[in-house]
Image (cartoon, rainbow, N blue to C red; front, side):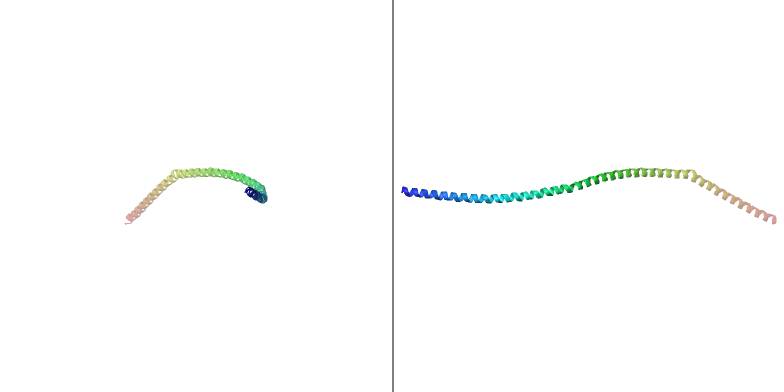
Length: 154
């Protein structure tokens, strides 16, 4: 039985070695496939990164004029804002001057009313009173002269 056991051991060893060889051959084949997949993935990644870099360069070239234009627009906007501020300050000054002139015109109007119109009204009242007095006097004279003629005639 020793020979049989030994033959079985040799047979097991041969099967184990054959299995190990098949496993090694499978791993080598599989690693080759993995290397091919990794190489294809790296090439794909390289293509994606290259496209991304190209897009970034294109964006950089396109953004430079846009940013320059934006800077110029900002300068113009600042200039326009400053001019608007100056115009508003000038407008405030003009409005203040007009308000002052309006106040002075109103004061002159009140002054004219107090100094000229009131005395004219008073003169008008005096002239009206005098006119009425002359009318009354004339009426009295007219009545007296009618009465006097009638008294002489009668």
